[in-house]
Amino acid sequence: MTSPTQTHKNPLFSGKPDYFIVGWMLFLHLMAVAALFHFTWGAFLCFLALHFVTSCLGITFCFHRLLSHKSFKAHPLVEGITAICGTLALQGTIQEWVSHHRLHHRSSDTDRDPHNARRGFWYSHLTWMLQAHDQESYRQLLDKNARDIMNKPWLAFLSRPSVMIGAQVLLGMILLAIGGASWVYWGIFFRLAFVYHTTWFVNSATHKWGYRNFEADDLASNNWWVALLAWGEGWHNNHHRFPNVCPTRFRWWELDITYLVVKTLAFFGLVTDIRQFPESASQEASKHKFAKQQLAANYGPTAAIQLSRSAPKL
Image 1 (tube, rainbow, N blue to C red):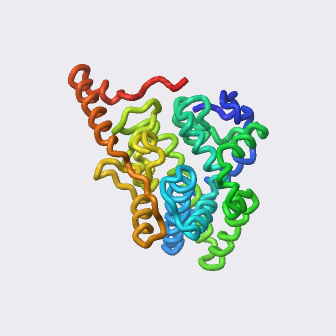
Image 2 (tube, rainbow, N blue to C red):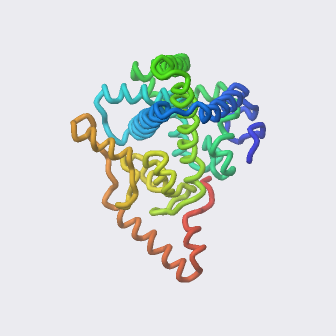
Image 3 (cartoon, rainbow, N blue to C red):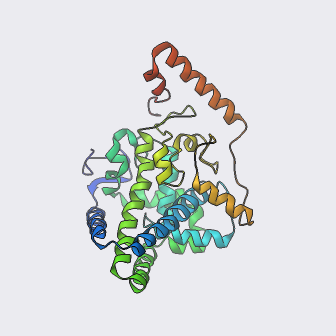
């Protein structure tokens, strides 16, 4: 595991720990463990509902596929409501989330990738975010990579850290009034910890384990169990090859729940202009499959598994 105190080649990081984030992560996970001692079925159902609302509707539907990649268009009301859902996931402001993700795609698994998976599993999963930012470089990144977010008044309002934190506190007060302390433990702390890790697995596990439908120059792979936990985001090789396409599933059996949500809303006219895989994708996948078969036949299955795990981009 890479220590957060080590100097990072990415100019966005100062190389020093962010003690506030470190403290928050420790506190959150302690409270998530404490939730296990305050279990009720009502609290558990509250967790499941808020997991779907904040992780699927908020992060994967809105922050990721709608705002970061613009892979479809949504009715302003849908965009506005799901942006609130994503804000309640407490994964940074909308501006920060979109900016980080766009940088990740532009420089995937290189030194300019905020969570470069070539630095190890734990670095890409968690420790990258325990470093303090170089404030000047960080502000320049946000202004450059997510200017479109700040041009929309509602998204700009939600991108204020005070609004993000205040919304979480308000949610906690509502849960306390409805279901008591157990709902707060499960609806806030356990839910946040669970959503954090399922999101982080997309940065870490899918860049370490899985298979590929397409040739790529990064480590992104398709991982079935991450896809189940993260509402379809685990089909990561498909997504990295065609990042602006709405569905992440390419094979018929690759379940993508977020895409089902998109299609459902499209049925009611609330989503339009859904970007699909180009016709050339099938031919490209067939060529990749043939190349793996040739490698397996000539050099064994290990060589086929390693296909596409090429050197990092310069």
